[in-house]
Length: 329
Image (tube, rainbow, N blue to C red; front, side):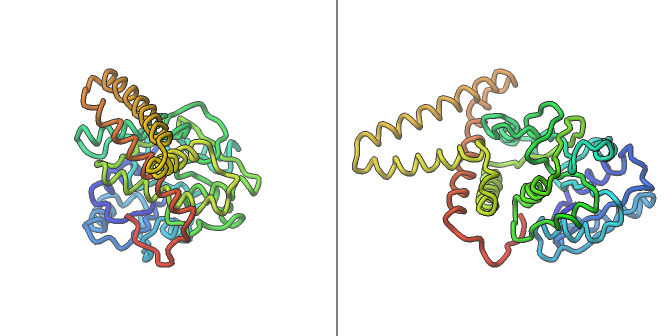
């Protein structure tokens, strides 16, 4: 479990792990903490004291980035199987058991499940963001977000796998501050492995609470997706192509409209079609959820995701990653 300043949710996650149907005596919890500055470690210590029948350990993640956290935790882990969880999630009580059953049945080299995306706060905007993060217009055909049947896929969230997999393909790439899981999954597929999505493996994932936080998240996603795709260009999927194409089209037409009237009309047409699609989705969702404000908030959330991801992706394509690794936020 990668972790940094998660005092609000860390106990929810630990409680969920404690309640797993898999035998506690056969589990260990390894938390790679990025030297948290809040009360996270105190919360973990309190949990350790009150739940002595579950082995919980903390290892330091001095780089404070997710791939190094995963690697430090894997290096410290003693089990035959590695099950990754996230500090922003709450796994269903059968999460570990179902993951191991799928692995033991040979369904995949790495297996994962679906997110039940919940709002990160009790506000209408937070609830709209959670809806946007699970809507096909917002995330395309990402089955782990929108659901579907059990099947082989190109990536799974978090993932569970046998420990000997990392001896075969290596640990997570610490030069990728985001998208480290997708890059790891690419190497699994290139080595002849399979990625299996099982909808019965479920976890609650808490979405960002504000448009600003959502934009920061998707700026990070877009930039590091570009860095990853520079190494593996053949892994590009249609859903990843659309946001940067949309942003590039807007930018190009905006510049051309300074000199050419046809560009102004094309720009207006692109904006009108995009706005219409957002409006239809927003109104349909507001009617379904019986919350009129979603007609405004949901389009704002989806547009924030698209534009942030697309702009950062384009910047990532033409730039090099920073040498200094920033703290994971």
